[in-house]
Length: 337
Image (cartoon, rainbow, N blue to C red; front, side, top):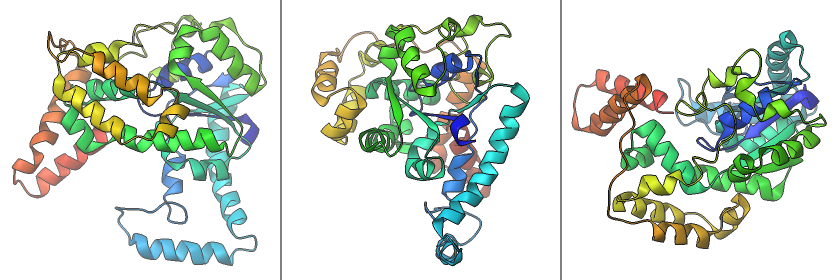
């Protein structure tokens, strides 16, 4: 499956769902919902540690290293065995479609890139980055109903994803194409032509008007991914490029948090990502700390669910309902991902 696989690497809220829909509109590419197939395999113990599991992770890691060392070709045999499993799943996803290429767009893969590159060194890699503060603002608004403190306590998103993806782009252990979200929405045909050249396929104009293709939206829009915008647009739009700054206006506490997050990121990573520190700092400084706050989004099933889950998460440590509270907390953790 190696030369038939496309991995779209990007953080949550980076525009990866829109990009996947564009790719899925090509006649040669099948773009199903996020698979989350690779992440758990990376955490079997040999490569990545397991922090919480219904078995002893320390013993498991020790045993995995002894086991792999005993194989005739060591790590190569281990990777081959894992690849047979993932190949079988990917092939069964792709075969019924009659298409040549399969796209796996799973943001969590950005945190196991060393393993992924070892497992599939000959696959096609696309790396998508977006203005870091746009990523963070969208994450807070979309999944935490604007509660930036709960969002950061739950998942310091930028501090995790920016270093991992930037190092991957700099070191390039595999051939890849680096896309910037802002370039993609402003010049979609030019950027998709770059992608198609990398994939060895011809560009198709329908990739731009992805929502108007025969058969309706691709599966990506119905699976895990963007719950707010991906299903509303038919083509790339620049409407959200500067939205993050408008969302921060009149909220000095959120601006201060963004400045604190920026301090945790290195100059090299930000340069690789595509937005230098000085640019971000100047943009944050230009946002008015006073004035009208952004209106909360209209109530939908998704926003109502988010508000309930964030409220539970915010107050979970103030209650003492024992096992029930812990189960609710774990449920919140799963749903807020």
